[in-house]
Length: 137
Length: 137
DNA sequence: CTTGAAGCTATAGTTGCTAGAGACATTAGG
DNA sequence: CCTAATGTCTCTAGCAACTATAGCTTCAAG
Image 1 (cartoon, helix red, strand yellow):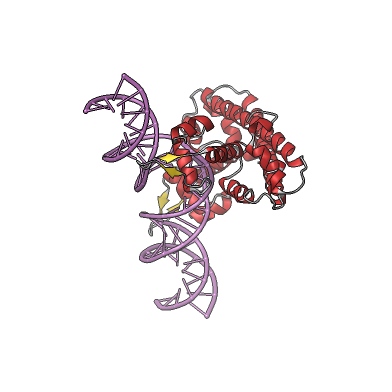
Image 2 (spheres, rainbow over the protein chains, first blue to last red):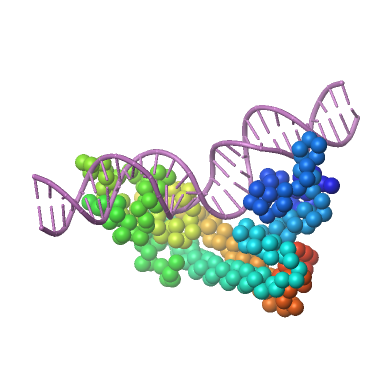
């Protein structure tokens, strides 16, 4: 049996975050000590590891909840799990594409040299006038 | 003189968002009509255009506030503006790198085929066991 | 048995908006 | 000039995913 602090150290998830996940229904409320403190078992530890990894990959709380309820029955088809992963990967690819456009624009703005005073600062000019941009964003 | 709705249409920023920017100190409180409605002039319009563009490039409200106060005096050096842009570009590059690692990992997980049931679903297995990962995240 | 760390609950703050309620202002048409 | 429709006002609350604080209780070591 682990206390919430021990679980926190072992999973790398902060104590308040673990309580938050419990509140959000990602983990079953664990048993309690005589003095009302949470006591976790191996299953709880594994569940939190799953959540941590899924969060690290950028999955939302809702997606994780779906995956967990899905994983309950080992006999069920897991198409939905693949679908969630694919959807999320696509989402990330979009994000990357958008950030790359922003990065290109910022780099261009950043590298344009000016006289060094606000009056003709290229950074400020570029921000004021969208038509100076090379790409959409 | 423009009403807030006209400004919204011309800048593409929604009405409540404009009021929010005012509250956040990004725009000076405009004059009011006899009936207490906001009335904007060209300067207000231009300021909102600046904000919109900066937000589209991902700059935070705080950064934008800094840039605006900086732009007040045309004689001042604008090193700080370049610095903010450079900082933000670096931040975006980091984000991109991280997302690319995630994307690679997700694609790998997504493409690994399994028997199609939850019991041996590679997506769920990969999420449960971090050691199956090929890269850090 | 004492003490200091760790845990408890409940509430509020973070960022950048967005949505709603209920009241008042403006404007176009008749 | 009156009315109806639309626009605007303030204030409050909600979103995601935590994080921080306050004031209290429990646990474990010495």
